[in-house]
Length: 437
Image (cartoon, rainbow, N blue to C red; front, side, top):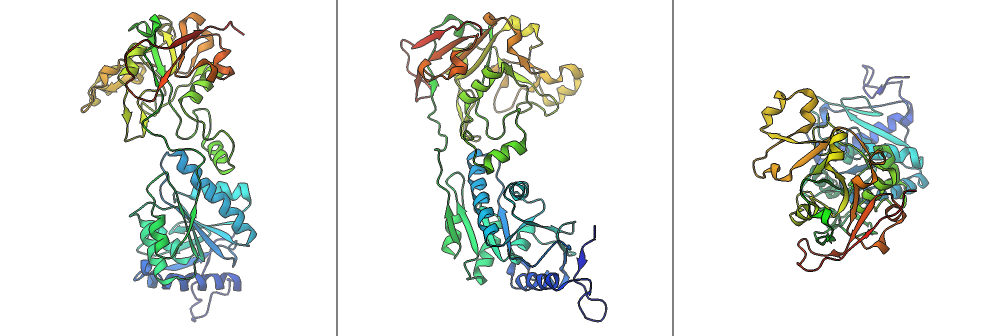
């Protein structure tokens, strides 16, 4: 394919004849907008714009976004903004402009494929449809916000580079060409930008944000829940993004297409998936990425849940009242072993086969109190004796779906309370055993 065409003259002060009039016009427009940007002042004399032959003179809408992290509700918000923007831009004959390496790039590329919206990429001293070449690279956010015909800001965090660049654009651009979204799921600069002239867009959430008042398992009355060291407890938790057996692409598709069930990714749904598949999938979320594991605790279920706390820094409980218990002797037979605690530098002293078991003792928190065990591989629960597996859930039997009521394993259903430390008293527990299918 053809290389990028330059806007440099041919030595006589005339435009490069290899450019067609659409491309030359696009360069002129981009440079005019860049010249009016305070964010790029002082950098323009050394800034050169190159367009690929695929770039045509269509209105370019810059799609921008601050870093998203692992917040599914924020992902849903941004996905809705992208889907709406794609439909609107496509109907108006516009083209998306996306910066290489930006937070929104992988989302925008996939949305472009799903919704058929043409996309132009921008790179700073790197291959792209539009290449900005300069000795002193400016911020890619500053460039894309300065040269675009319109702006679609899917999410802007306060006091970030994107907010500052948008404020600079709004000082000189009174054409209502900047649209910003407001979200309730993360700190957002949208309202401040609206006051400065941006057009606001609000996404109405379908679910409430998580709080510390999640259901708590009351102390169970069954003997197995009080025994320490006999059962290994695996508590499930909600999945902030993709499930362990779901690719990032599948997850983004579900978000962008607004598929049903995307909101239901809590600890109960996680347990339901485990029971339905009969497998505990090993993952590397709580260990080094090179060692996917399944984690357990040898504490009794009562003690484990009684000591749980809400981790505000990650907006979740450390343990949830849903999960699987495996009899320790059965677990040992399939390779589950106790964690080796020590100083970080002691890990290298272990044999390679034992390194999946290592965990630092900790400085501000003594992780040894967790009494953790690990499996180095996915566990097939269907290969175990049914009497060696227990299922527990902080819901009433009437609330359980078919996956929990029609299981070969013994299920402990328990009453729930809205407090992390429920009052003492007679526990409300029901046990149901269903015959093997």
